[in-house]
Image (cartoon, rainbow, N blue to C red; front, side, top):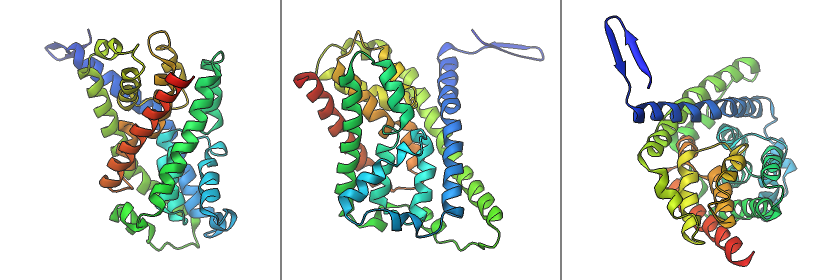
Length: 304
């Protein structure tokens, strides 16, 4: 039991409060390096990348274009939370909101760090690795295609759109870089902290025993692991080893759903994405990802 000791004061913190602090801090500590890396990438993209360079080198055909965008994570192996500031930079350079969603959903799964850790954790079960890679690619591109027919300016928060239209003096790129980094820090850090605190609170409130009780059902196990992925908000670069601990209790399909859903949508990720996308878009995308990752898990359970 942790004790808080001051002058003439000794107080023991309740265990649930200790757990809340520990879990919240663990999410922040795990995500912070990747958020910072993503902000540096975003800063570089917005300040030093020539304005039309990215658009000129992407295919014109929409399906090929989104497919290539979904593979950008191979070259920029940033965790999901770091991809949000990076996606903001890419949006400012000309990607459409639908294309940025494709990148955000695919990049945390289709990057070398995530692929290697998944292969190491499930080295004797290639089904999990292949289903995660193909599932992540297909779901991201399907959602990107769905939103490509939506009015693009209606997907973004007005505050973000206004920040993209700011005119900066390109004669001093270092000053511009510091300006963007300061703006991203003030936007991302509160979102990260709030998301981590909500994730920590839910993990304290929801009994782990209730989750484990449903682990052997081919259908219920998928839904339970999707819920668990949403709550624990663990980084995609290490989530395979976390999922490995449930291998003897949960079905393979449920583990695939966990490993696919978590990098795309979790509490921390939604809090960060809220800085850029409108609430209605995030609710719709979350619902679609739940349906598609659940379908993926059921296919693995019943077909393989």
